[in-house]
Length: 138
Image 1 (cartoon, helix red, strand yellow):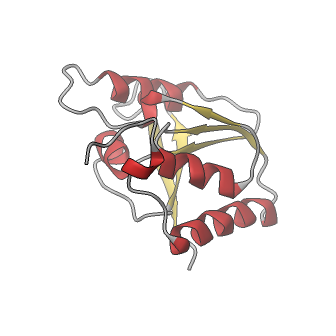
Image 2: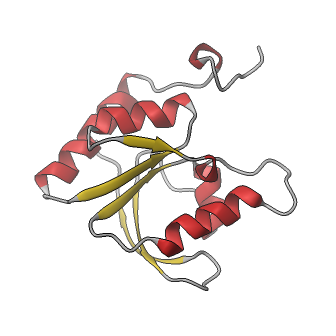
C-alpha cells in the first residue's frame, strides 16, 4: 500500500497506548502549569493526533518537523533548526515530531512520547542545547 499524507488509513497511526500517552502528556503540562504559547506538529496523522489529544491549544503544521528523505541539502532540518533557535516566547513552544527528525537535529532517537527540553542557541549546530529529558508517561 502506498503511504499518502492526505489519507490517514495509509499511515502508521497511534494505537490505544499512544493515544493514552498523548492525553497523559497534555495532563502533565497542565498539572505543572506550563504555559504553552505555540504548538507545531508534523502534518502526518500520528503527530497531529498526538497534538490534538494533548489538548494544549491551537495546532499549526510544519514540514520542518518531517525528516528529510535524501534531500541535499537537508532543507527540512535547516527549517527545524531555525524554528528551534529563533524561539523567544513568551511561554513554551511544543513541537510534535518524528524520531528521525530529532536524530538529525540532536544525534539520537528519543523514546516514543519522550519530552525533550531545549534551550534555543542561535548559531549552534542544533540551534539549541538539550537541557532535559522527561520519560514518556506510563
